Amino acid sequence: KKTIDQVDVAGKKVLMRVDFNVPLDENQNISDDRRVRMALPSIKSVVDRGGQLILMSHLGRPEGKGFEAKYSLAPAAKALGEMLGKPVAMASDTVGDDAAAKVGALTDGGVVVLENLRFNSGEKKGCAEFAGKLAAMADIYCNDAFGTCHRSDASMVAVPEAMAGKPRVVGHLVAREIQYLTDAISNPGRPFVAILGGAKVSDKINVINNLLGICDAVLIGGAMAYTFSLAQGGKVGDSLVEKDKVELAKELIAKGGDKLHLPVDTHCGDDFGNIAGCNKKVVAAGEIPDGMEGLDIGPETAKLYAEIIKKAKTIVWNGPMGVFEKPPMDAGTKAVAQAIADGDSISIIGGGDSAAAVDQLGFVDQVSHVSTGGGASLAMLEGQRFAAVDLLDEA
Ligand code: 3PG
Image 1 (cartoon, protein in one colour):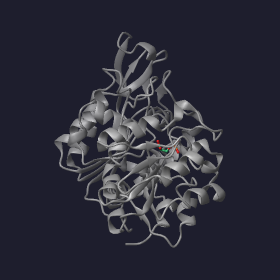
Image 2: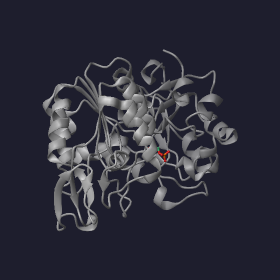
Image 3: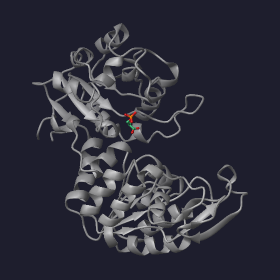
């Protein structure tokens, strides 16, 4: 795909879709600014070459009923201004009078952030009329919102469609994320190992299915493992399970054969609300007593998984192995992160919880790539194509 660096932006208006869907605390402070920081290369590419930059994003999931302060993009605009060391204008609406005025007042090298796209019902609906108003603002379209690439929202698809005939390009972040994941999936160094955790089998069915076809080993952890355990006739005590997914887990076990690795032991406890203080013990997988629930993979599983991980040449990891926020139930996730750090694989960590785990446990610099997209990176691991990227200009 053609990139933002390959178009002449001087004096032109560039409409860039970014994913500034950042977590905010109760005081509207950004608690993790990675998504803003990771968009900087594309933003600077436009600003430094004298382009006039219009940034648009969603934040959270407002329902399209107009402005709501808690979903405002103002904190992101402020953070961006600090990172760039110059003022960034913030429009109080998306396609209204204030946006028009602030876009009209842009000078070369200037930046304006439009207010949350999802304050408009047209965004989620992919509405052509809403898209047309956004499209009319600019000469060039750029998609640098990797975290949102699996969505067909207006700003992702209808806007670039409405801008047919004008340059429509990818930004650095989208190009880089797609490159990493595509290389891993289509031409992996082997052994190729997938590590999948998290709470629900239902979120990962298609991923497990697809990865069993292309990986050499798929390691399962997190609460998802208890549904598999149930499928094998194990006792899961009070563990989180999806009873309606047991049949499906059986099918995946049959399909996976010896590629699919399930925990051999489990660290369980009797009070999720008080993990530090409750009764805890390690039991064989499938032997969790009533009154207790699985909270992490056990030490034997961690050792077995670490051996497989250390030999890997390519690793994709999505979802923690246990309740990593609460020691000692961080041990399994830590052991996996440590094994990745000790090995010499290309390692790609999916966004969301696994990215937070790697960050919180201090392993960020020891993995090859931490994705900014949770759902988007999962969609890629499922083998999905993105309409939002396919329709952009070829290089
Ligand atoms: C994300 O956080 O995964 C992206 O920003 C997409 O958000 P969405 O799931 O609300 O579409």
